[in-house]
Length: 459
Image (cartoon, rainbow, N blue to C red):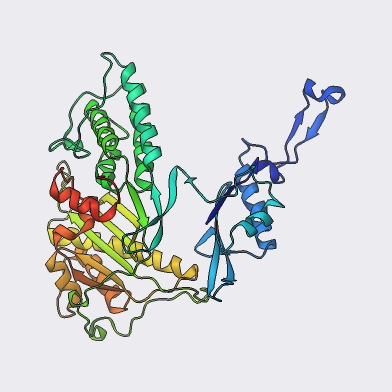
């Protein structure tokens, strides 16, 4: 994997609008003349689109094709010279930041450099990408894998908050000890402290944005708390801001966390899954496969979905929370926590809503992987800790008539019937998605769940 950064990106693209200006005194004898602008200047509404389209034309010229599931991911069929392995090479483009996955990534980046000048010294093995530190690591099983750490981003955010607190009356500071993101049994939805003034409300909103990016960079251990605080962006209160400071106190104490993209195949206990004949209920249904998917290259991958809900956990509206984590082999790649849009009267209903959302997300991921030329080994292994839901998705003869729940019920069961998913039970203590639905206080349970997801956090 190599990275690169395009220099003066937008200015490399021709403008797509008709824009003129009057030349200033810095143009010497031409001052006062009207001039047409021919390059996509920064600040023009169409500059980003113009650069993106210009770069896309160059990528096609160099023999790369856009992935149909993500037009900013470019693919090319390659052969590894040392052993003849067929694989897909990738170039990921985020505006002017580029990542190349290739057996010799410097070659395609050097070729691209002939058309789009890269910043000097930017073609290298990645260290930081979009705020995350990337580094190869050797796992205890001897496997070499890439790891993604948000430690530097987190430490910088914590330092900014510390400096801000020092400017407040009384020269405040973060707590020196915080074993969990929230203190005690704090519930943001029940907070009736005074409302923040516009300036402090704006500060609160900016800090939520930073914390949400921490979650994007792998801090799954604060996903529920940040999601709950995000629900109060329109009318934040003093207590909500205090809760934000407590989250930062926790991050200050536990900043060194990594998500490791372990390619090892998981050990799947097939006794947890029951295969039955669903023809009498849903007929000859099969998973819909994209007809225009590229030929798969490389090894197959396993997908696992851990799903959970917190029934009526939101004490003001009594809505439940959906949480799930999707693993590709042993690597967490998707994490999600969000309040459900409806009030469910039973744990059973809340769990089915959560499972439907998780399966729909997994379905999109299965499509994207296939369009990237990645082969899937079989159905997604779905783990839930509610036995009623597991039984109702393993046995065709079970029935459900309540309409609001039946929609989710049939959506999940049809996914099982078509072979896209297979449902099994997992003990609540080992269900990693529990961290995405509940405010788990410090202690052995929290340490166990977080330790199953993140590396180095308690070192």
